[in-house]
Image (cartoon, one colour):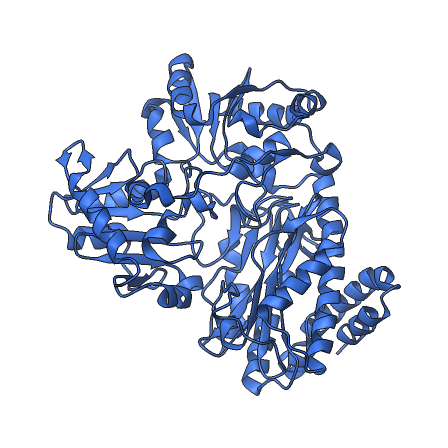
Length: 610
């Protein structure tokens, strides 16, 4: 029997009996990746799409009808989905020109008048309305199903929701009190005539409150909702999670906070909408459920001001980002030096043992709190799976015959890191060298770009791709994402990619984003080079008519393998950029490795000018 056959049969039975405003029964059920906070990554309790489909990637939407089961996912996960989905499922490759949207497909394949069910808590308002618009065009409707059908199929085997104790973040790391953040938020609320702000994004709540949690692996967040008014902050949370020093933390931060049960957020929003006369601010990226609790006439729908405040780092956060990346760079160099030597000696090293060794090096660094995501330690063909995670059944040796791609990161009290390096410890092919060089050219070009303040990230995306495009190659993921400060490794609202980002406020000083072009030869190898860059002022003769000029400053400190570079493909400017970066890495890290001559020798070799 196929792995999902029984689950789908149970789900389809529930679909027939589901109660809707129009009567009984739905023709399709849509299962997103999201939890009730529209998080990118979920705890085990909320991995509903993975449970019903078998696909474990972080992005994807399952659609189940009476006759079909389909999974939409983007180019990062095509290979993974093909490997994980059983024969009950059809992969729909999102992002391709010929791929229909979910709503369009349903409208064409369901009878007119059909009802399509969703859990309104798990769909953002924006995503739900997009599907609803397409369905309505085909005389179908989108309906909210209060009791989640996947949970009913899962039953007693569904893992419980975690409820781990929070920690407080010292002001030496946070750089701004809750009271100061609240004042900035209230000022934005006044400008929008809003008396209340509903916050559901977990990283926004954690940042605003200078607290961190561990309810979702690798993401230092905790399950809560928050309502901010001009007079009060109300936190909806399981009170057993609050740390012993919570009241002292609030005193240090100059605020008082009202605590309500996590499950009562719906009642809180209903009561609040009765009490306020002006607008209620809520993000369209919050759930359909929460948005619809606010009368349409009272809704101010926009990304929260907290999202932008969080993205633009304060001086202490900037300092922490730089320092944490230096310490992380030492760990990376120690790992790659150890790995190269182990491979040369013929020692048995594989993807899993390599990832474990890298984590060991990171654990020795000050302020280390854990990994920021599962290490993508990938050798040979596994490297072509963009978000590959090593597992026992796929584990490959790291050797001198194949390309090795390592994408990894850590959480430190003073910053979050995310870095990718690609190595060949033997003799790379000419094609591997050419594609590596073209990825590097894109990364150097993007990283040295000068642009006007508040330029949308999508405008810059092509700069990282052009060298690959020149020979008809590309990569199926974005070029850059924001990154949190001891928070989520992927952070909005800005980003750089080929897809529009509707909430992108434009790139601004002291945002931090990734710079990560790549190339992937299916079934053979993968190449990605990733740095974290800080957006800083650019010094130019002109200033874009006083709009302001910005550029990028790379804060990741780790060499890029020059053995893989075809120097003749680089321009003089690109050669200088690479050599200048390697001099910076040497000057920054070598004093910290004075008591580690083995790694220091490796660093010297890898940072030699070409």
